[in-house]
Length: 172
Image (cartoon, rainbow, N blue to C red):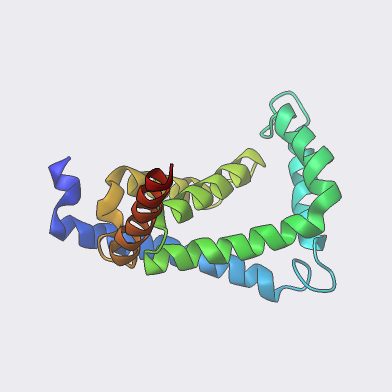
């Protein structure tokens, strides 16, 4: 595991993290400026995507599993407008998190969760690549955000929580 934490390898993790963040921002920004995703016609494009996923749930060898098709039909489609905002702004937030290296683990987990959902909906595209890079960065651990704002933010947050925990134990 020492090789993952090498200062030279941290540069590689940073390049991968920033590249992944850019992919998320580009995808989210495209959705935000498209009025079929957000704005007056919010949810129209997502409804088309979700209906396409439902079509992939039919046949002898469906690429969308029955349980996920039920989720799409019963939860996502009736709330397509809300999901269109969650998806588009979520993608941008994941991208910002990864580029800045701020709350990197949260950004990686959220991005991986979105990639997983896209793949469960029967979409391949670049999702397996993005999912794999996400997994690699999660395995790299803290070395993935040594060059980033987490280097400063996480010790600060830890200090605040330790101070609060210490103060609450004194009062009891």
